[in-house]
Image (cartoon, rainbow, N blue to C red; front, top):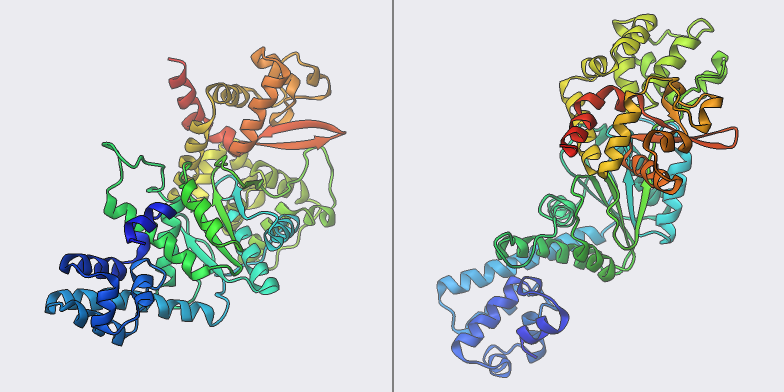
Length: 492
């Protein structure tokens, strides 16, 4: 079977076959030799030549390369090119030997996980059992997606012996030690992640003016092929942290999962992809204090958002002890910051300068400006840009609803059924309030609210057996610079 026939039958491109096999086939065709004739001249078996040309063997021995070059009567330059292609395959063999030597460990987190036990346990169980093979962890910027992915990867590696292949796109600095592994593994995994979930993996057509250049497409495809060959049919976890594209290479993902039946993929991103087999896992902020509850210091300190805030506070003020007098202020700070881990850390780190009363007052007066000040320009800009992207992805009616909800003052009623029990207080609302605001049917309102939840701009709460929702304080604070601009443009 010829190389082209095999490629057509399997749907593979020439890049899948490997550079060495393509060179051998090209030189053989040029001099007009059959595989049998080359086998006779080189003393290499017909089967070995066929396997090399068809990509079933990609790492020939040095003696094999020399005998094939002699049989083809190659000149110095062509012989050097053939030897270089063979070395490329041999480097892949060295990488596979290193990978097979022991399970590759994930990056090591430098802090403890707070308040995510149920999420970590659920994802670990789903991935370990193979119930889910493509998990997409979504949530607000700074909600802790990377930290959860680190925890799940560590549990799968430690409990089930999964090799962890980690790739991260650019973003905020995260507290973990980089992964280690055999030479070349990091580059290969990064190339595969970029091919599947990076900016270049946007489903460009294969032909036409916007098509990707064949050389670039082949290089990206080759990384996916090489990773599939490396993992083969053994368990492994591929983690892609911080994917920004909303149009991944679905064909490449399907192919990788098909060729590696025990591979699992864990992605952290900004929203669902809506592709076959995707497990969309919405990660909300940490549980925060409820405004209507009076807490003791001990009870407040057990709430995950407060626990994280106090742990960070004690890094700058080790002597601090939560007192009954401080309970209302700590509860209000954690509530205004929505239990968002990055915001809680930023605020707590500045208590070396502010006292609690001042911090609470500043958050009440101008939450957006203070958060940018506390977190630094880069962190604040990242949050705002991520919010803009999320709002832009909402349907037009969802953007309009978000703007209307953010314009409401806490406690403002709309005449809906929910107002009797305080709808709108602290930004909370029920479906009846959405119906009153929009004049739409309850099914339409349910869809719009679901869009807000999936976008990470609102969270559900279940009080007294009733479904209620709340737009995050941080979203309300940044809304003038994000959703309202988008909404205005949509109504021109």
